[in-house]
Amino acid sequence: MFSLKSVVVGLTALAVPALCQTADQQAANYNDLSDKSAALIPEVNKVAATDAALFAAGQGQFPIINQGLAEIVTTGNTYVRQQQNAAPVAAGAESDTVVDAFSAFVKQHTDLMSALAEKAGLFTVAPFVGGPIVQVLILDERVLDSLVFQTINLVPSRSDEISNLGDSLSSAVRTAKTAYEGLQLGGTLVGRRNSEGRVAQVMVA
Image (cartoon, rainbow, N blue to C red; front, side, top):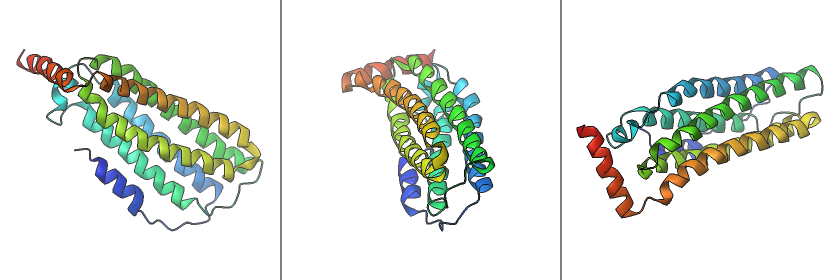
């Protein structure tokens, strides 16, 4: 089951030595994050209204999605640490290698966030679904900001392009986060009880 505490511990306890990585190694980091993001998109696409009923029991798609996002956060934080002392990448083929991989990651993660945001509309009567998603997206946003800032420093010759990619990615994450925060706006105690009652009816039916 997803645990926000485990993610926070992972963020603070990881002590990966900072190594001077090559452009290929840096690109491999982004390719890994891209693969993790791409793997989650089909899981998000499986989300249905019935997942609200399964949510309380720790079943359905949301535990899978939360755990997948948590893994991206932890892995991203690891790569931030590994690349801290990396020398700037020279303009040309090496910078192309890093930026191409970073750009591919941005696309995959943006697609993931877009798919996630679209599913929020299924749960307007189940505001309790939003909380865990919002929590992990806050951590996701933080590590992505660190990766963008670090990539700008790694490839100064492409700083404007990387900054624009980062802005686009941040916008996608904020949109998804706002969608699930919106679910919580109606999540008063009475609202939650009414929503839980409707979910219980779905389970009985």
